[in-house]
Length: 474
Image (cartoon, rainbow, N blue to C red; front, side):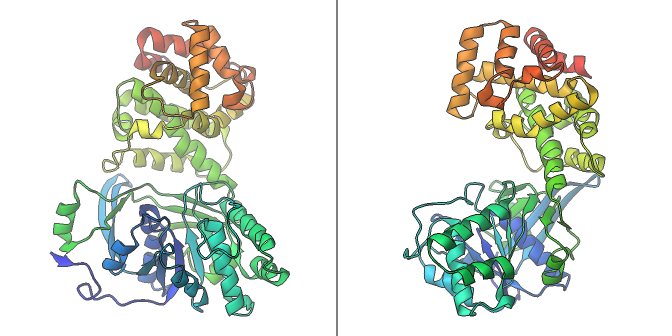
Protein backbone atom coordinates (compact mmCIF):
# COMPACT_ATOMS: atom_id res chain seq x y z
CA UNK A 1 0.00 0.00 0.00
CA UNK A 2 1.06 3.59 -0.65
CA UNK A 3 1.81 6.09 2.08
CA UNK A 4 -0.96 8.63 2.59
CA UNK A 5 0.70 11.94 1.71
CA UNK A 6 0.18 14.88 -0.62
CA UNK A 7 2.54 13.54 -3.25
CA UNK A 8 0.65 10.27 -3.64
CA UNK A 9 -2.83 11.82 -3.59
CA UNK A 10 -1.87 14.98 -5.52
CA UNK A 11 -3.40 17.42 -3.05
CA UNK A 12 -2.20 20.98 -2.49
CA UNK A 13 -2.39 23.01 0.74
CA UNK A 14 -4.99 25.76 1.21
CA UNK A 15 -4.83 29.06 3.05
CA UNK A 16 -5.53 28.44 6.72
CA UNK A 17 -8.91 30.02 7.38
CA UNK A 18 -10.02 27.73 10.22
CA UNK A 19 -8.45 27.00 13.60
CA UNK A 20 -9.78 23.82 15.20
CA UNK A 21 -9.27 23.34 18.96
CA UNK A 22 -9.12 19.56 19.29
CA UNK A 23 -8.02 16.80 16.92
CA UNK A 24 -10.28 14.02 18.18
CA UNK A 25 -12.49 11.71 16.17
CA UNK A 26 -15.60 13.84 16.52
CA UNK A 27 -14.25 17.13 15.18
CA UNK A 28 -12.43 15.37 12.35
CA UNK A 29 -15.64 13.59 11.22
CA UNK A 30 -17.90 16.56 11.90
CA UNK A 31 -16.41 20.04 11.60
CA UNK A 32 -13.51 19.16 9.30
CA UNK A 33 -15.92 17.03 7.25
CA UNK A 34 -18.16 20.07 6.75
CA UNK A 35 -15.25 22.31 5.75
CA UNK A 36 -14.22 19.61 3.25
CA UNK A 37 -17.71 19.57 1.73
CA UNK A 38 -17.77 23.38 1.50
CA UNK A 39 -14.44 23.28 -0.36
CA UNK A 40 -15.66 20.49 -2.63
CA UNK A 41 -18.79 22.55 -3.42
CA UNK A 42 -16.63 25.51 -4.40
CA UNK A 43 -18.14 27.91 -1.85
CA UNK A 44 -15.22 28.06 0.58
CA UNK A 45 -11.56 27.93 -0.36
CA UNK A 46 -9.76 27.37 2.91
CA UNK A 47 -7.77 24.93 4.99
CA UNK A 48 -7.63 24.03 8.68
CA UNK A 49 -4.87 24.28 11.24
CA UNK A 50 -5.60 21.93 14.13
CA UNK A 51 -4.57 22.35 17.75
CA UNK A 52 -3.89 19.21 19.78
CA UNK A 53 -6.33 19.23 22.69
CA UNK A 54 -4.46 17.24 25.35
CA UNK A 55 -0.89 16.36 26.23
CA UNK A 56 -1.43 12.83 24.86
CA UNK A 57 -2.80 13.66 21.42
CA UNK A 58 -2.31 12.76 17.78
CA UNK A 59 -0.51 15.81 16.36
CA UNK A 60 2.50 13.73 15.31
CA UNK A 61 0.30 11.16 13.59
CA UNK A 62 -1.69 13.85 11.76
CA UNK A 63 1.49 15.58 10.59
CA UNK A 64 3.04 12.29 9.49
CA UNK A 65 0.08 11.89 7.13
CA UNK A 66 0.32 15.58 6.14
CA UNK A 67 -3.20 16.15 7.47
CA UNK A 68 -4.81 13.58 5.17
CA UNK A 69 -7.30 10.95 6.36
CA UNK A 70 -10.57 9.29 5.37
CA UNK A 71 -14.02 9.69 6.91
CA UNK A 72 -16.23 6.64 6.43
CA UNK A 73 -19.98 7.16 6.73
CA UNK A 74 -21.78 3.96 7.63
CA UNK A 75 -25.38 3.34 8.55
CA UNK A 76 -28.94 3.78 7.37
CA UNK A 77 -30.12 6.67 5.23
CA UNK A 78 -33.62 6.83 3.73
CA UNK A 79 -34.03 3.10 4.29
CA UNK A 80 -30.80 2.18 2.53
CA UNK A 81 -27.49 0.95 3.94
CA UNK A 82 -24.78 3.56 3.38
CA UNK A 83 -21.04 2.89 3.23
CA UNK A 84 -19.20 5.80 1.63
CA UNK A 85 -15.74 7.27 2.03
CA UNK A 86 -14.56 10.88 1.84
CA UNK A 87 -10.91 11.89 1.65
CA UNK A 88 -10.25 14.85 3.94
CA UNK A 89 -7.50 16.96 2.38
CA UNK A 90 -8.14 20.39 3.91
CA UNK A 91 -6.21 19.87 7.17
CA UNK A 92 -2.81 21.49 6.67
CA UNK A 93 -1.12 20.66 9.97
CA UNK A 94 -1.61 20.02 13.68
CA UNK A 95 0.17 22.07 16.37
CA UNK A 96 0.98 20.63 19.78
CA UNK A 97 0.73 23.68 22.09
CA UNK A 98 2.26 21.72 24.96
CA UNK A 99 5.57 21.47 23.10
CA UNK A 100 5.32 24.51 20.80
CA UNK A 101 3.04 27.16 22.29
CA UNK A 102 4.80 29.83 20.23
CA UNK A 103 3.62 28.20 17.00
CA UNK A 104 0.07 28.29 18.32
CA UNK A 105 0.24 32.01 19.09
CA UNK A 106 1.80 32.70 15.68
CA UNK A 107 -1.42 31.55 14.04
CA UNK A 108 -3.14 34.55 15.67
CA UNK A 109 -1.24 36.75 13.22
CA UNK A 110 -2.73 35.00 10.20
CA UNK A 111 -4.77 37.61 8.24
CA UNK A 112 -6.76 34.86 6.46
CA UNK A 113 -8.14 33.29 9.63
CA UNK A 114 -11.94 33.53 9.87
CA UNK A 115 -13.27 30.73 12.05
CA UNK A 116 -12.49 28.97 15.34
CA UNK A 117 -14.16 25.65 16.15
CA UNK A 118 -13.70 23.78 19.43
CA UNK A 119 -14.58 20.51 21.09
CA UNK A 120 -12.76 20.22 24.40
CA UNK A 121 -15.43 17.98 26.04
CA UNK A 122 -18.18 19.38 28.27
CA UNK A 123 -15.51 19.93 30.96
CA UNK A 124 -13.31 22.07 28.70
CA UNK A 125 -15.34 25.26 28.93
CA UNK A 126 -14.58 26.10 32.53
CA UNK A 127 -12.78 28.72 34.56
CA UNK A 128 -9.46 27.96 36.22
CA UNK A 129 -8.01 30.28 38.84
CA UNK A 130 -4.54 28.87 38.12
CA UNK A 131 -4.26 30.79 34.84
CA UNK A 132 -2.63 34.21 34.58
CA UNK A 133 -1.21 36.40 31.82
CA UNK A 134 2.39 35.65 32.83
CA UNK A 135 2.11 31.91 32.15
CA UNK A 136 4.14 30.75 29.16
CA UNK A 137 1.73 27.92 28.36
CA UNK A 138 -1.96 28.10 29.23
CA UNK A 139 -3.59 24.73 29.86
CA UNK A 140 -7.21 25.83 30.31
CA UNK A 141 -9.05 26.18 26.96
CA UNK A 142 -10.75 29.56 27.62
CA UNK A 143 -7.39 30.87 28.87
CA UNK A 144 -5.68 29.66 25.68
CA UNK A 145 -8.39 31.35 23.63
CA UNK A 146 -8.10 34.62 25.59
CA UNK A 147 -4.34 34.68 25.07
CA UNK A 148 -4.80 33.93 21.35
CA UNK A 149 -7.43 36.62 20.78
CA UNK A 150 -5.41 39.20 22.70
CA UNK A 151 -2.34 38.49 20.55
CA UNK A 152 -4.51 38.88 17.43
CA UNK A 153 -5.97 42.14 18.76
CA UNK A 154 -2.50 43.55 19.38
CA UNK A 155 -1.03 42.35 16.09
CA UNK A 156 -3.79 43.87 13.96
CA UNK A 157 -4.11 46.96 16.19
CA UNK A 158 -7.75 46.24 16.98
CA UNK A 159 -8.89 46.10 13.37
CA UNK A 160 -12.59 45.29 13.30
CA UNK A 161 -12.30 43.15 10.18
CA UNK A 162 -9.87 40.80 11.92
CA UNK A 163 -12.41 39.50 14.40
CA UNK A 164 -13.40 35.82 14.19
CA UNK A 165 -16.45 33.59 14.24
CA UNK A 166 -16.17 31.24 17.24
CA UNK A 167 -18.28 28.06 17.23
CA UNK A 168 -17.87 25.77 20.26
CA UNK A 169 -19.18 22.21 19.80
CA UNK A 170 -19.02 21.21 23.46
CA UNK A 171 -22.21 19.47 24.61
CA UNK A 172 -23.34 22.02 27.17
CA UNK A 173 -26.22 24.46 27.13
CA UNK A 174 -25.33 27.95 25.84
CA UNK A 175 -21.79 26.79 25.10
CA UNK A 176 -20.65 30.00 23.35
CA UNK A 177 -22.21 32.28 25.96
CA UNK A 178 -20.38 30.41 28.69
CA UNK A 179 -17.09 30.44 26.77
CA UNK A 180 -17.34 34.16 26.06
CA UNK A 181 -18.13 34.97 29.70
CA UNK A 182 -14.97 33.17 30.85
CA UNK A 183 -12.84 34.90 28.18
CA UNK A 184 -14.19 38.27 29.33
CA UNK A 185 -13.46 37.30 32.95
CA UNK A 186 -9.84 36.54 32.08
CA UNK A 187 -9.64 39.81 30.16
CA UNK A 188 -10.65 41.64 33.34
CA UNK A 189 -8.42 39.64 35.68
CA UNK A 190 -5.42 39.99 33.37
CA UNK A 191 -6.02 43.74 32.91
CA UNK A 192 -6.06 43.47 29.11
CA UNK A 193 -7.89 46.76 28.74
CA UNK A 194 -11.30 48.09 27.76
CA UNK A 195 -10.34 48.40 24.09
CA UNK A 196 -9.64 44.67 23.91
CA UNK A 197 -12.96 43.90 25.60
CA UNK A 198 -14.76 46.18 23.16
CA UNK A 199 -13.05 44.35 20.26
CA UNK A 200 -14.04 41.01 21.75
CA UNK A 201 -17.67 42.09 21.92
CA UNK A 202 -17.97 43.94 18.63
CA UNK A 203 -15.56 42.30 16.17
CA UNK A 204 -16.01 38.65 17.15
CA UNK A 205 -19.08 36.46 16.94
CA UNK A 206 -19.50 33.81 19.64
CA UNK A 207 -22.42 31.60 18.53
CA UNK A 208 -24.10 28.86 20.56
CA UNK A 209 -24.32 25.57 18.68
CA UNK A 210 -25.90 22.13 18.88
CA UNK A 211 -24.10 19.24 17.17
CA UNK A 212 -25.65 15.89 16.28
CA UNK A 213 -23.66 13.08 14.71
CA UNK A 214 -22.53 9.76 16.17
CA UNK A 215 -18.83 9.15 15.57
CA UNK A 216 -17.38 5.78 16.52
CA UNK A 217 -13.82 6.61 15.39
CA UNK A 218 -11.02 4.33 14.31
CA UNK A 219 -12.33 0.91 13.14
CA UNK A 220 -9.62 -1.16 14.78
CA UNK A 221 -10.95 -4.58 13.78
CA UNK A 222 -11.47 -3.62 10.14
CA UNK A 223 -8.69 -1.09 9.57
CA UNK A 224 -6.35 -3.33 7.58
CA UNK A 225 -9.12 -4.47 5.24
CA UNK A 226 -10.35 -0.89 4.70
CA UNK A 227 -6.83 0.40 4.03
CA UNK A 228 -6.27 -2.40 1.53
CA UNK A 229 -9.38 -1.38 -0.38
CA UNK A 230 -8.34 2.29 -0.30
CA UNK A 231 -4.80 1.53 -1.42
CA UNK A 232 -3.35 3.69 1.37
CA UNK A 233 -2.18 3.08 4.92
CA UNK A 234 -4.42 5.41 6.92
CA UNK A 235 -3.89 5.41 10.69
CA UNK A 236 -6.52 8.13 11.14
CA UNK A 237 -9.55 6.39 9.64
CA UNK A 238 -12.67 7.89 11.20
CA UNK A 239 -16.05 6.11 11.09
CA UNK A 240 -19.34 7.96 11.67
CA UNK A 241 -23.03 7.70 10.85
CA UNK A 242 -24.45 9.42 7.73
CA UNK A 243 -26.70 11.68 9.83
CA UNK A 244 -25.39 15.23 10.25
CA UNK A 245 -26.95 18.21 12.01
CA UNK A 246 -25.32 21.44 13.13
CA UNK A 247 -27.70 24.06 14.52
CA UNK A 248 -26.08 27.46 15.09
CA UNK A 249 -27.70 30.31 17.00
CA UNK A 250 -27.00 33.44 15.00
CA UNK A 251 -28.62 35.94 12.67
CA UNK A 252 -28.19 36.27 8.91
CA UNK A 253 -24.86 38.06 9.34
CA UNK A 254 -23.18 34.70 9.96
CA UNK A 255 -24.06 33.44 6.48
CA UNK A 256 -22.59 36.64 5.04
CA UNK A 257 -19.31 36.06 6.88
CA UNK A 258 -19.11 32.29 6.28
CA UNK A 259 -21.07 30.02 3.89
CA UNK A 260 -21.48 27.25 6.49
CA UNK A 261 -25.01 26.46 5.33
CA UNK A 262 -24.10 26.18 1.63
CA UNK A 263 -23.20 22.48 1.51
CA UNK A 264 -25.62 19.58 1.16
CA UNK A 265 -25.27 18.90 4.91
CA UNK A 266 -27.92 19.91 7.42
CA UNK A 267 -26.59 23.17 8.85
CA UNK A 268 -29.29 25.36 10.39
CA UNK A 269 -28.76 29.04 11.21
CA UNK A 270 -31.42 30.03 13.73
CA UNK A 271 -32.11 32.85 16.14
CA UNK A 272 -33.41 30.38 18.75
CA UNK A 273 -31.53 27.15 19.44
CA UNK A 274 -33.88 26.00 22.20
CA UNK A 275 -36.25 24.10 19.90
CA UNK A 276 -33.44 22.05 18.34
CA UNK A 277 -31.84 21.37 21.71
CA UNK A 278 -35.14 20.27 23.25
CA UNK A 279 -35.93 18.12 20.21
CA UNK A 280 -32.59 16.31 20.41
CA UNK A 281 -32.62 15.87 24.19
CA UNK A 282 -36.20 14.61 24.43
CA UNK A 283 -36.39 12.49 21.25
CA UNK A 284 -32.88 11.17 20.52
CA UNK A 285 -31.46 11.14 24.04
CA UNK A 286 -34.86 10.49 25.60
CA UNK A 287 -35.45 7.40 23.46
CA UNK A 288 -32.07 6.06 24.57
CA UNK A 289 -32.69 6.71 28.25
CA UNK A 290 -36.27 5.35 28.28
CA UNK A 291 -35.15 2.04 26.77
CA UNK A 292 -31.56 1.03 27.49
CA UNK A 293 -32.04 0.00 31.13
CA UNK A 294 -35.06 -2.14 30.33
CA UNK A 295 -33.17 -3.52 27.34
CA UNK A 296 -30.25 -4.58 29.50
CA UNK A 297 -32.55 -6.15 32.08
CA UNK A 298 -34.15 -8.23 29.32
CA UNK A 299 -30.80 -9.56 28.09
CA UNK A 300 -30.12 -7.28 25.10
CA UNK A 301 -26.70 -5.70 24.65
CA UNK A 302 -26.72 -3.10 21.83
CA UNK A 303 -29.08 -0.40 20.56
CA UNK A 304 -29.34 -2.13 17.18
CA UNK A 305 -30.39 -5.45 18.76
CA UNK A 306 -32.90 -3.65 20.95
CA UNK A 307 -34.60 -1.76 18.11
CA UNK A 308 -34.71 -4.92 15.98
CA UNK A 309 -36.54 -6.69 18.83
CA UNK A 310 -40.22 -6.42 17.85
CA UNK A 311 -41.44 -5.85 21.40
CA UNK A 312 -38.92 -3.10 22.15
CA UNK A 313 -39.54 -1.51 18.76
CA UNK A 314 -43.23 -1.15 19.65
CA UNK A 315 -42.35 0.15 23.12
CA UNK A 316 -39.96 2.81 21.78
CA UNK A 317 -42.45 3.90 19.13
CA UNK A 318 -45.20 4.21 21.73
CA UNK A 319 -42.94 6.30 23.95
CA UNK A 320 -41.89 8.57 21.08
CA UNK A 321 -45.07 9.01 19.06
CA UNK A 322 -47.74 8.71 21.77
CA UNK A 323 -46.05 10.33 24.76
CA UNK A 324 -42.91 12.38 24.08
CA UNK A 325 -43.98 14.12 20.86
CA UNK A 326 -47.58 14.86 21.98
CA UNK A 327 -46.13 16.71 24.98
CA UNK A 328 -43.95 18.92 22.73
CA UNK A 329 -44.53 21.83 20.37
CA UNK A 330 -42.98 22.41 16.96
CA UNK A 331 -42.89 21.13 13.41
CA UNK A 332 -41.00 18.17 12.01
CA UNK A 333 -40.93 16.19 15.26
CA UNK A 334 -42.28 12.98 13.72
CA UNK A 335 -39.75 13.12 10.88
CA UNK A 336 -36.90 13.63 13.33
CA UNK A 337 -38.16 10.70 15.44
CA UNK A 338 -38.25 8.44 12.36
CA UNK A 339 -34.67 9.49 11.59
CA UNK A 340 -33.70 8.62 15.17
CA UNK A 341 -35.14 5.11 14.87
CA UNK A 342 -33.27 4.65 11.58
CA UNK A 343 -30.06 5.80 13.27
CA UNK A 344 -30.63 3.32 16.08
CA UNK A 345 -30.70 0.54 13.45
CA UNK A 346 -27.16 1.37 12.31
CA UNK A 347 -25.41 -2.03 12.11
CA UNK A 348 -21.93 -0.51 12.23
CA UNK A 349 -21.91 1.47 15.48
CA UNK A 350 -22.15 -1.42 17.99
CA UNK A 351 -23.58 1.01 20.57
CA UNK A 352 -23.55 -0.84 23.91
CA UNK A 353 -26.54 -0.36 26.21
CA UNK A 354 -24.39 -0.28 29.33
CA UNK A 355 -22.23 2.50 27.88
CA UNK A 356 -25.37 4.62 27.45
CA UNK A 357 -26.51 3.64 30.96
CA UNK A 358 -23.66 5.64 32.51
CA UNK A 359 -25.03 8.26 34.97
CA UNK A 360 -28.63 7.28 34.33
CA UNK A 361 -30.10 9.35 37.18
CA UNK A 362 -28.95 12.70 35.78
CA UNK A 363 -29.77 11.56 32.24
CA UNK A 364 -33.30 10.58 33.23
CA UNK A 365 -33.80 13.90 35.00
CA UNK A 366 -32.81 15.96 31.95
CA UNK A 367 -33.99 13.71 29.11
CA UNK A 368 -37.17 11.90 30.20
CA UNK A 369 -38.58 13.63 33.28
CA UNK A 370 -39.51 16.86 31.40
CA UNK A 371 -41.59 14.78 28.95
CA UNK A 372 -43.33 12.98 31.83
CA UNK A 373 -44.20 16.25 33.55
CA UNK A 374 -45.36 17.99 30.37
CA UNK A 375 -47.48 15.01 29.37
CA UNK A 376 -49.05 14.79 32.84
CA UNK A 377 -49.76 18.52 32.79
CA UNK A 378 -51.37 18.36 29.34
CA UNK A 379 -53.34 15.12 29.69
CA UNK A 380 -53.91 15.10 33.50
CA UNK A 381 -52.25 11.69 33.90
CA UNK A 382 -48.74 10.26 33.69
CA UNK A 383 -47.63 8.53 30.44
CA UNK A 384 -47.46 4.73 30.58
CA UNK A 385 -44.28 3.97 28.62
CA UNK A 386 -42.22 6.69 30.28
CA UNK A 387 -43.51 5.72 33.73
CA UNK A 388 -42.45 2.16 32.96
CA UNK A 389 -38.97 3.45 32.08
CA UNK A 390 -38.71 4.92 35.58
CA UNK A 391 -39.75 1.56 37.05
CA UNK A 392 -37.05 -0.10 34.93
CA UNK A 393 -34.52 2.43 36.26
CA UNK A 394 -35.44 1.52 39.84
CA UNK A 395 -35.12 -2.20 39.09
CA UNK A 396 -31.83 -1.65 37.25
CA UNK A 397 -30.31 0.16 40.22
CA UNK A 398 -31.75 -2.17 42.86
CA UNK A 399 -30.47 -5.31 41.14
CA UNK A 400 -27.23 -3.89 39.78
CA UNK A 401 -25.71 -2.15 42.79
CA UNK A 402 -22.11 -3.18 43.15
CA UNK A 403 -21.95 -4.71 39.67
CA UNK A 404 -23.06 -3.02 36.45
CA UNK A 405 -24.50 0.28 37.78
CA UNK A 406 -22.15 3.13 36.89
CA UNK A 407 -23.18 6.42 38.47
CA UNK A 408 -22.02 9.04 40.95
CA UNK A 409 -21.22 7.55 44.34
CA UNK A 410 -23.74 9.74 46.17
CA UNK A 411 -26.58 8.39 44.01
CA UNK A 412 -25.47 4.80 44.43
CA UNK A 413 -25.21 5.27 48.20
CA UNK A 414 -28.79 6.58 48.37
CA UNK A 415 -30.07 3.58 46.43
CA UNK A 416 -28.23 1.28 48.82
CA UNK A 417 -29.94 3.04 51.74
CA UNK A 418 -33.38 2.83 50.10
CA UNK A 419 -32.90 -0.85 49.34
CA UNK A 420 -31.87 -1.54 52.92
CA UNK A 421 -34.73 0.48 54.41
CA UNK A 422 -37.58 -0.63 52.15
CA UNK A 423 -36.52 -4.24 51.57
CA UNK A 424 -38.97 -5.79 49.07
CA UNK A 425 -41.84 -3.38 49.77
CA UNK A 426 -42.57 -1.96 46.29
CA UNK A 427 -44.80 0.89 47.47
CA UNK A 428 -42.24 2.17 49.97
CA UNK A 429 -39.42 1.77 47.44
CA UNK A 430 -41.21 3.76 44.73
CA UNK A 431 -42.21 6.52 47.15
CA UNK A 432 -38.66 6.79 48.49
CA UNK A 433 -37.12 6.98 45.01
CA UNK A 434 -39.70 9.40 43.59
CA UNK A 435 -39.40 11.77 46.54
CA UNK A 436 -35.60 11.74 46.74
CA UNK A 437 -34.52 15.38 46.46
CA UNK A 438 -30.95 14.45 45.59
CA UNK A 439 -32.15 12.67 42.44
CA UNK A 440 -34.81 15.03 41.13
CA UNK A 441 -34.75 18.25 43.13
CA UNK A 442 -38.48 17.81 43.78
CA UNK A 443 -41.05 15.25 44.91
CA UNK A 444 -42.24 13.27 41.90
CA UNK A 445 -45.13 11.76 43.85
CA UNK A 446 -46.80 15.10 43.13
CA UNK A 447 -46.95 14.27 39.40
CA UNK A 448 -50.48 13.12 38.64
CA UNK A 449 -50.66 9.31 38.49
CA UNK A 450 -46.90 8.74 38.26
CA UNK A 451 -46.40 6.88 41.55
CA UNK A 452 -49.30 4.50 40.84
CA UNK A 453 -48.00 3.61 37.37
CA UNK A 454 -44.38 3.19 38.50
CA UNK A 455 -45.52 0.97 41.39
CA UNK A 456 -47.65 -1.12 39.06
CA UNK A 457 -44.91 -1.59 36.47
CA UNK A 458 -42.21 -2.31 39.04
CA UNK A 459 -44.46 -5.05 40.40
CA UNK A 460 -44.92 -6.50 36.91
CA UNK A 461 -41.17 -6.42 36.29
CA UNK A 462 -40.48 -8.30 39.51
CA UNK A 463 -43.27 -10.81 38.95
CA UNK A 464 -42.88 -11.66 35.29
CA UNK A 465 -39.90 -9.73 33.96
CA UNK A 466 -39.40 -6.71 31.71
CA UNK A 467 -40.93 -8.22 28.59
CA UNK A 468 -44.19 -9.11 30.32
CA UNK A 469 -44.43 -5.59 31.69
CA UNK A 470 -43.91 -4.11 28.21
CA UNK A 471 -46.65 -6.37 26.84
CA UNK A 472 -48.96 -4.73 29.39
CA UNK A 473 -48.02 -1.29 28.06
CA UNK A 474 -48.43 -1.92 24.35
